[in-house]
Length: 317
Ligand code: F6P
Ligand code: MN
Image (cartoon, rainbow, N blue to C red; front, side):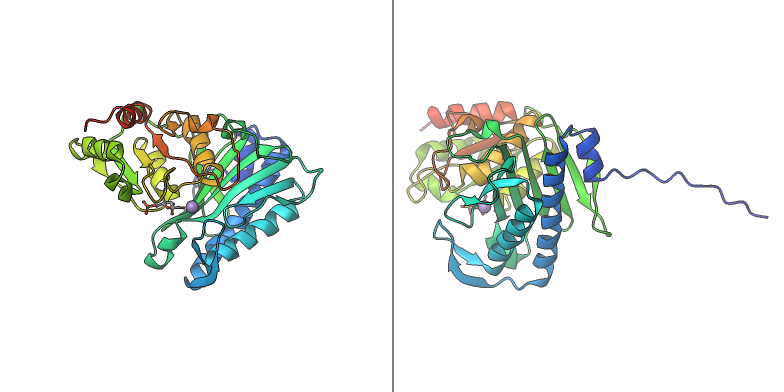
């Protein structure tokens, strides 16, 4: 008679359990992050099933919205509102702060579909979230976030979060559960990859041209997709790298937004041992004055971020 030997199936750790045991998240924050992860599953499904066409409208930045920008925004709004944990939220797709439940403990900032212009090319895109305590974000600094996360919709869907002490990545499995992929992600001080955004700016910004030239003359390898979430995720995945988006004539402060893009990703980057600066000031120390605030950003491996900031301040012309 054959006797079957029980296999030791590896224990899979869910996002919910990880938030509880490792993330040290209070119950309300854990519930909120799990609710956000549920929204992301609906967005992932919408990406697969909705056409990539334009919505026929523009967002507060005058950028043409695709249908999925609007749909993703609606999906997130629905889940935040249903959670009863959110006092107010700010979305890249809406021009004002939206009040939900004044007695609720948190405020959420988000970019519902970062890189959505890449949808028709079937490149990776993402959703970015920052979470603050209290009912107002204006006047605060991104350093005051208590958690940040992003979801990357690529060949696989992953979620990366921090609750303010370390960074962890989860994979969406076939039954719709986010399962732990990598814990305690670290970013080394030295970058082997560089990812320069808004490169049109080198035409008018000679300091940015000088920085680009130092990268071109180095042994570093270019990795640039055109979606900040994917490009910053590349740094977490490879454990090193540097991403920049610096201003020129069209976008004097660069293209990216402090509240929904640079703030949350800078919070994650610092928890992984990297850094993020606008060239002079740490991104996390910038005061949020208005919701549509743009900022230059240099983010990733600490030593290279420092060197890049020095080069922008003292370009070799
Ligand atoms: O949300 C703006 C965005 O799509 C980012 O995800 C991306 O990094 C940036 O625009 C790309 O800008 P550019 O094409 O100018 O480098
Ligand atoms: Mn974006």
